[in-house]
Length: 423
Image (cartoon, rainbow, N blue to C red; front, side):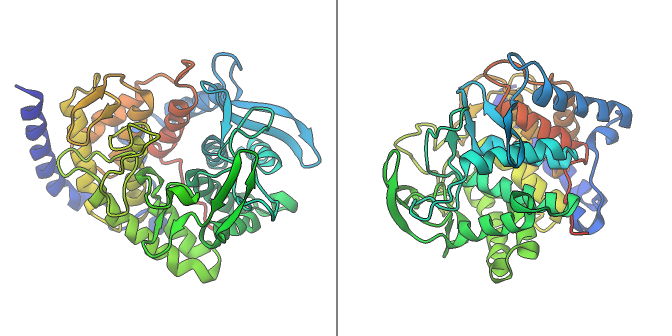
């Protein structure tokens, strides 16, 4: 049987199972019920095993051997306390993406010391506060390990996760003073993301024109706030599960905007994913069609950014249960990857399913497992078990991106990646 025929068979069966299984789901998402699915527990693993596996992954990635395991590194102290950063060890830099994922992991695991150390480093070196700077109010997306910038422009996925992690920290631990007034900082960053004025100014890397991170009339996140890249988006930056929380907790004048942005992103997932494979491109126009970038030849394909898109819609379903189409999308994309071989599917594809890279990446195994939170077919168990059976990423080229996605997937699939509500 050809892979195409196998895929069609699996997909048809998934639709049938989905139609039958949909009735068994709880009527509301975790935001309303406070109940988070523990997929590992559902599929036969003990709570003790699950806790041990999560703790092992955290210890290895945050406090393991600095040369062969860790992505979290302490770097001295200042007047605010301990400093630490999360490094992309392959590229030997510190990225707002990694900082934000590190903060989110820390708050979910109740690791306040690590959270505060990462946040202290981010505000000390990464945050741009000068009113004369065109990127004022944002975080530089890439710095050297000593805090010297490689860029002084921002990438919205970093700000999005930072804001959400700060609200969760405020609700879980309470607000402190200065940089540890978590809610005040979350409000400040979220306000800048929407209302940043269009500013022309000089950076260390030349003049820049920087504006908001959102396309106001489309209710969508931009790829970057730099004027040369306002006209398109990144599907993996769309986080409706977060936006609906900002519509409840963020600055009051913007709450309606974030509610509409959540709805727009849910519709966008339907437009930007392939109708047969469920694959999304790395970059897309606001109408969902692939965007061909001059600086990223992979941008029209399912590549390194895009693997997070299915994670975003699955978590949105898990938390909110607002869009049943996300279940169909989940069945579709898992059916596609199953048709490529559960142990052999690649990392990069054209949207219609042509293999571009046969590396079986741990980060994609991780995000495909998160899809099981929304999928309704029996394949969901296989994808969850694939994550369970995957070792903690440790290779030099996978510790950072694959490793952080792996640890977040372990939290999502165990029901430990939660909404921390105001007390």
